[in-house]
Length: 382
Image (cartoon, rainbow, N blue to C red):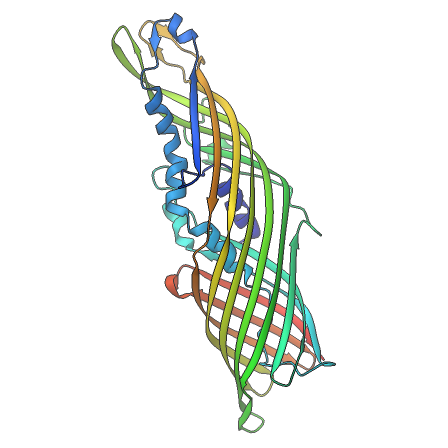
């Protein structure tokens, strides 16, 4: 997946389509234009219209409430090297960088539409790290990642049909969103300790060796803040009444507003890896892990706009582009990740003297074909 896809998913998820949730909520209200009454038109189903225009945000949250935070905590556990089961005590040390990414339930995007707004979610992690041995059997590695410290995201994203490139009034008849990032800061810190439970031993000299078994414990913390300004267009049918006769017309909601999301997430991840070395150059490792996740994501948005009639007749009145009413959207929400996420990791490290090149992948055991991470890394060990 490309970085831009993940950034877009983030903005799309948090900027607008956020629903009702226990102990939080979203409120959309319509203040009817008093000119309608002068024409003898009654907006009888205003309450139903408010509910109709709120259905997409509500459905989005109810169908994605675990996907978004889980995608974040899953990728936040990346950034460590997992080759060679131990680093000998100082002055032995290692340093380097690792970059990876992941996606949670990637097939959900295939079914996305207004009636079923399901999306995948994920992220990227490009951390620098350094480590050293504490004893012959124990080592420790620290990692750090920052988005905003050395790079600030400043971009505009949109979602909608191809015809929205021109975004003329007559063309917009489906949900369309455009969002611009105005502030972005993400910090990720981590520490991983490894205990070499079983030491390496030779099986076939100079060819095959048992690389040992390590029991690891990672502690990863992520703190972030994003701010966006956005524009939303959505079209639905509404009912207006004149002289006791009901007329169903198309009306377009146009909202402009700002949104912010802040999160603080902590993962504690025990792991067990078994290693096999071939010609010393190749070190294969594999094993299970489970992340225990804590924290929350807090979202706020405020938007205002208009509910406009498309060119329609209500009885003897042609509404033209008359405002049906003014619309306000207010949302305050909180999300939490799953407490437990189990994974299985498979990796390879190539050892070329002090240079180590690492490639690994991991799959979530509860969603093994749809949720996974990949990572590549380069480090130097002396």
